[in-house]
Image 1: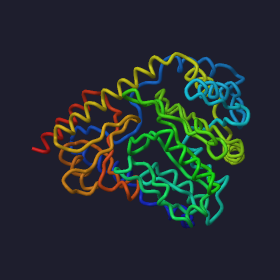
Image 2: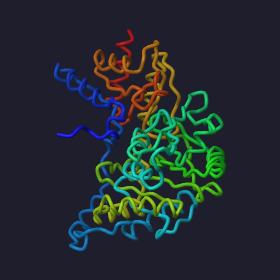
Image 3: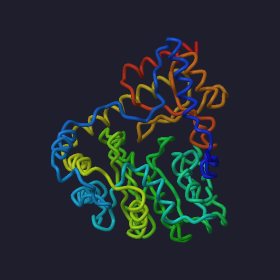
Image 4: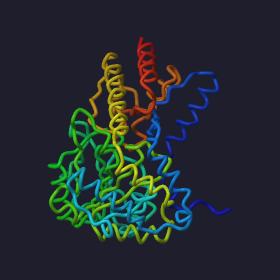
Length: 387
C-alpha cells in the first residue's frame, strides 16, 4: 500500500474526529450528551421543497446526466433571488454556476487559479476547507488573524507586502463561521480596493446571509462598485432552508472566475441531480414563511445561550448572524481543555476554537442546532458545573 500523498500529510490533525471519539466514550458511560458542537440544522426542510423534489424525481427526464453548469431554471432562480435580496443583477448564463453544495466550490476554486507557490489569503479562525483547498492546489496559505478587538475582520493593512504581491485568492466569510461576526458594505469597499490594487480574486462565502437577527441585513460583496471585477460569492441552500443533506449551492459573480471553476468541475464531477435543482427553484421562488420562522427560532435559541452565559459571569457578544455563538473561554483554560471539561463533567459538547485555526485559541463555539429546551438544560448544567 503506498503512503499518503504529501498534500494529505500537510493537513493539520482533524480535531473534530477527536471530539467525536470523546463523545462516544462519554455516551458509553450512560451520560446524556447535549451536542452543541454540530452546525447542522435540526429543523426540517420545508414541505413544499420536498414535494417539488418528489414530483421532479418521478420525471424520467431528470434521471439522466444533468448539465455541467446546472439547470437554467435553477440559475435563473438564483439570479432573480440575488436581484430581489441584494439588488444585484446577474447573467444566469455566465455569472451563475450550480454547485454540489458551496463547500465543493470553495474547495475547488484554487485549482482554477492557484499554481504551486502562489499565496492564498485565508481567515484565521476560519472554515477549514479554505486552507485545505489551497494546499491541495499546491498553494501556500497566509493566515489573516481575526481579532475580537477588530470585530473579527481581517486587518488588510497588516498583510505583508510580499504575501499580497504573491496572493491569487482571498477567502472571506460574513456572517462568519465560527465567530458569528458580520461585515458592512464599507468593509467590502476596502476589500475591493485592496483586491484591485494587488490583482486578487476575492472569494466571499455568503452562506449564512439569511440567518440574520435584530434587523441586521448582511450585505453582499457584489453590492459594492467594482466588486464583480474582482470577486465571486458562494452561497448554499443548506442553512436557510435546512437542506444540508441535499447538497445544493451556487457560485456567482466574476465571469472569468465562474468559468474557471466551471472548467474544474467539468473534469471532476457530473453536476447536481436535476430533481434536487428543481427543489432548489421551489426553495428560492416559493413561500419564505418557514425560513423566516426558522430565523426566529434560531434567534430565540441565541437569546437563551447569551442569557445563560452572562448569568454565569462569562463574556459573550450577541451575534447578529449565523446560528453560532462564539465566546471567550473563561477561567484561563485553553479551548481544548475547556471543551473537554464541559463534556466530561456536564455532558455538554462545544467546539474548541483552536479547531478553526491558531487564532481561535481562547474561544469556543456553540451551535444553536438543538431545541430550546435542550439548550436551556445545557445552560443549567453549566451553572451547576460552575458551582
